[in-house]
Image (cartoon, rainbow, N blue to C red; front, side, top):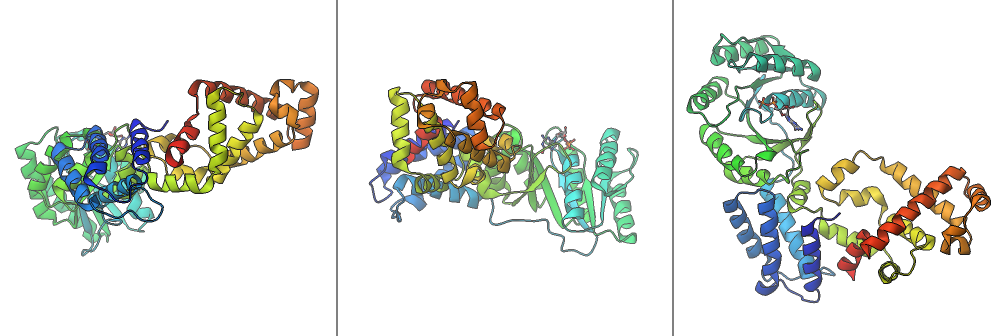
Length: 445
Ligand code: GDP
């Protein structure tokens, strides 16, 4: 499950054990992997070069503190630098202006401007208790105006009508006037999309900016755009004084390297992330979490610490060795595994440490229920005799009934556990070492 990068890094972490400092020689391999990871995440090459140089500067000669190994310390430095490059603290929307505070949305067609306008309206209405008006300056696509009308309604915002025969500048002025007269706190202005950078349309949005004097000019960019995001960002940065970035479609497969490039090119903070097509799919951008995503791993240092602190390493290694040597994986081992999962601070806290793309799906799982499940399973195994645990094939109907009674569950639940154990046993044989065990052995062993 862990990405190839995580595997490589943990191996390198292990190789670097016992060295007290980060040096030119021990840092080289590690940085090569980081460089690859950034390129794979679609960070633009010049941005990668810059970043690696900065990390190297910071890392060289650094003493390695406490129980951390140089490798772990370096991963920490990389993560921190990545997060710092993408943002410093939480950057919320600035509304410090004579009302209405105008927010101008800019970006390529399809970037998610209209969707984000409505998401932002909802955010401002619900979280900041503002009265919000939206308007579309897209006079080229009547459908775009209709789309904004629909999503504004979903967001609970008022929508100001515009038609394709009007000039964007006139629409903007009329909406501004209406917003003032009706005491709106915020006016969100959606603009015409352009498929590529187009001089005429760039001029149009520049004019809109001059007329509206917005307190926020947000550049909306699709995270899937990868390398191209750099050129688009540069063009918008040259045309407009951008005050923030919204990175959309982070729910997709992309590792989101565009965040790093766009931030570097524009210098503007990334304020929000779009995480679904739905109207509530907007999150305040979390640079640290995103750093983990770009590297293809979560906060690996925290994970290393948590894993080694919470788990009886000796028991874990014995178990791993046992599976590897082909000695039967029995219900005692199954129980030990369940208990190790609990020791690691619970599933939910472990999930927090894993890369976002791995946990995106798991987010739909109810963690409390998963933990309750583990406890029930423990209860069932504890109701078995030592012999039954070693030879699960002995467990037939009468024994099942007895075990179920002892654990206070239905017989079906005992069956389910035995099935699960069967599957796990098969998997362990195939994996020869087991995912979690392998990971733990590498990190702490
Ligand atoms: P615009 O042309 O810039 O106004 O882009 P739209 O708002 O029309 O969005 C283009 C497409 O991207 C639509 O199908 C949206 O539903 C979709 N979209 C926008 N933001 C997100 C997001 O954060 N996640 C996902 N999955 N889809 C998004």
